[in-house]
Length: 478
Image 1 (tube, rainbow, N blue to C red):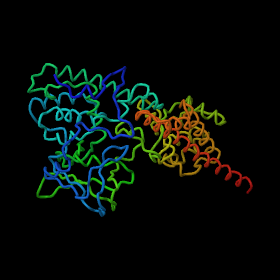
Image 2: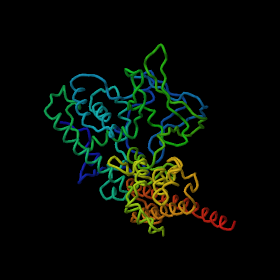
Image 3: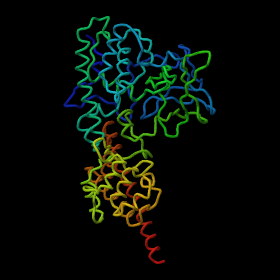
Image 4: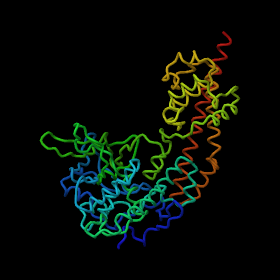
């Protein structure tokens, strides 16, 4: 049998639950699957699509290949339009090989939806004369997502929630490789979903990464209730747009009353100057998602946050470290338990993950819990609705002393979280300056951003404590 991964170009040594794969350095552009792939713009036009004459494919530096304006493009201009048959989607029907692909897809959990479409991508990659080959041949040969980091560089991430997700995906790929082998190993060639080619954990990881980093969830065919379900699809050429929170382009879907087929377009959301890259907003996401699914880290990400587990013992320790007397996180009173239940922080189905950072600075559920647990008077707390207790903009709803205690506990919690990282930001920055591999560079950037968001939260909360102290001093003088 042939293999979907060329052993001369990719290392597929698997140790424990991590993959070892050769990566490009940050100073080079990731190689595409073939050295001289077909002209993608020409192919899109040949298939009845539209590409603005000033849109060109160009090197985007460390971010790989992207789309660049060859001349100024005015706001509102149509940049790219793809007819319905061009996007790559998981098919609704087909022959025996398709049914076997569907059977494999049933073993993919919903949270790893990219693997389902990845199976279709692998099928088309293996198929001689695939309709999508001009597109697939332009895809990167490697991806910089953490499932392909060497084991020691995965540990360099220094952040338990992301390490858990990486190891979870690696374990899935190893198990799924066995399931694929079991299901397709004895199939006849005409029924084999991958044309008889071997599919291992590395090729499955490549396909899942290609989809997670490039696919869009757009409206599909109308359902029986008249609504349209979200359908993951890969959009040739459109997926070469890089990410920006302040993107200069946007995706729209159009369907005329006379034609039921859906047209996917990219339109300029603002004036795009010559040599500017075309960008889309991939979503208001933290760097956990960007690194895990896309293989990059956004500096100074306004949506970056750190994840903590709500734990009574941890919060008792933080309050004591902050000099707050009578902490009751481990043994809340019945009325406090009621509030925790309403915040979904108590009970069998409780969601114990809470966050610091991002637009909220402090997740509302965590703030409300701290305010309630540090209060002695149930009647005073119950006068306020949960939204008031959850809002940091509502200054001291339970009084200055309660608010000061809550904020000091949060600051102590930040100190504890920061001390969980074995290195300091200055040490990380010094390592970056020495020049490191792509995966190490990403790991360093990721953990620097995590530590930075903790420090930013501490600074913000410290300012609030100082303001409360000055307000308390003014109140005592009146």
